Amino acid sequence: MPFPDFDPVLLQIGPFALRWYALAYVAGIVLAWLYAVKLIKTPALWRGEAPPATQQQVDDLILWVTLGIILGGRIGYVLFYRPDLFWTNPLEVLQIWNGGMSFHGGFLGVALGVAVFARVNRIELLRLGDLVAPCAPFGLFFGRVANFINGELWGRPTDAPWGVVFPAAPDSLPRHPSQLYEAALEGVVLFLILRWATHRAKLLPRRGMLTGLFLLFYGLFRIGVEFLREPDQHLPEVLRQYATLGMLLSIPMVLAGAWLVARARRRSEPAARADGAVPA
Image (cartoon, rainbow, N blue to C red; front, side):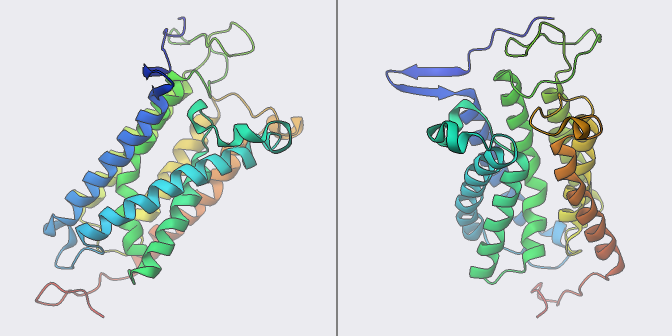
């Protein structure tokens, strides 16, 4: 099927242009913020413990997370996928509105922001990570939909009836809409897994469990979809035959996630005091 005729600019007034790509990030961040507030305001999920942060702290954390997403995502994209921009077109490094954000870079940026915020506010890092993790799929879903609207990060050629001919691709072959596969897996399915962990299994009191589940399943989903994505052209040819950069960057996430899940399963839940306060 032909690529839908999307205009990447939703609204333009004079020199100001509101792009779908920017709107996707705003929607993901706002929904994640609202969901985090909802989680800390649901005492039953914490099974007698106090949430790791107050609403005021969650409101403050959003700024740190936003900076981590933007700076980490863009710097990571340039370092991992387009290092040539540093010497061929340095100004393009700053043009995030044209697309080109790396999840792994954004993840590292957010992780750093959360770690610094936790230290400054004297919050246990894993507990704060367990609050942030179930909120992340909102941004992942909208980000991947924005990738599709931008006609970027297409998949390998396919003869499937839902194959899409992307205008920016180097040929006119139908290709996997891998952006939508990732939106479904990293956004919808991952959200449902973490929603089960928070609301049905009540796993929030187990330090690191939600963080581990996020890392584990995101990494597995990303590695799986990478088999259908167009290989990174800047990698050595011998490596492109067996792996993509997305796979290589996701393997440490899977290993770290599996370790955190196993660690959380081995450790008993901390006993909460009768007044609901967190034990020292």
